[in-house]
Image 1 (cartoon, rainbow, N blue to C red):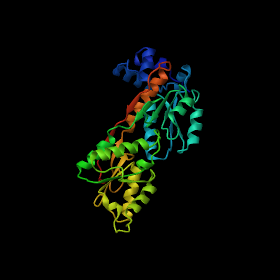
Image 2: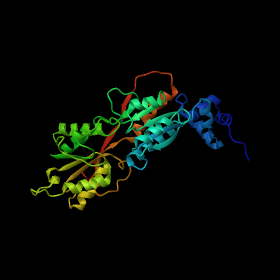
Image 3: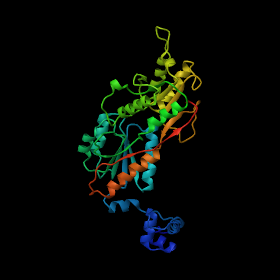
Length: 346
């Protein structure tokens, strides 16, 4: 068996120093592109593979980060962790994916086990544990939260874009719709103070709808954030009241708090003979399938989160914490990007 190629062999074949070869393989900006290409070509020719584990061990690190989410099977979180894993891979980091099942005890138990021996940093979509409790459990372990909306954050955080709701209702108003209804979650009078959960998103959405003139807080249909509950909500909307009217007939467009609700609403309307978009329009939020081929009839109009942008911003802050553990700074807040996807449903 031929001996394994070393970094010294790669440097000799590329005609550069070992330090330059190492920097090129690590993707450092100090190496000119033409030199980097020569080094990578030499590494490929020789079959050289850097020993990342040894490199991280020398630094006292694991070379891994953890991503903690409520559910691996939910399309939104699947897209999110896929983007996190890709962004981490570009930085030569492995990603450990952990799910809580929307359970407070599970979320707390997992967070308690997070330390420098498990991973170098944590990206956390907290849904049940408040940031003060998280800080007590995590201490100074590098951590970035996602979608945790508070006035005085204790952690670096990546939030959805503030303009997402305004852009969505602006588009709907521009299309000529006159009366909207929000579907999903709890109405304002039933919301609890859960900054890591979905209450802030509902408040922002209701405010955006009111600003657009398309409706107010009373134009709301309560349902869980999943498809089967939205199907049932559609059936309720189509029920005939004692006065012979139907709630569905009050509105010309339904804004759904996520895409799964939108797909369920369309299915439920179909069951009741209500056509989308011919009779009623349906608009989604999240873009869970917007970056691949949409396969539904009709295709969904939605405000799609840029999952890669969110992941890159989270990784930038997390790696900065990992690389500079002694730097004291105020928690940073970044906002992810989103884009309007115009389908057939609205």
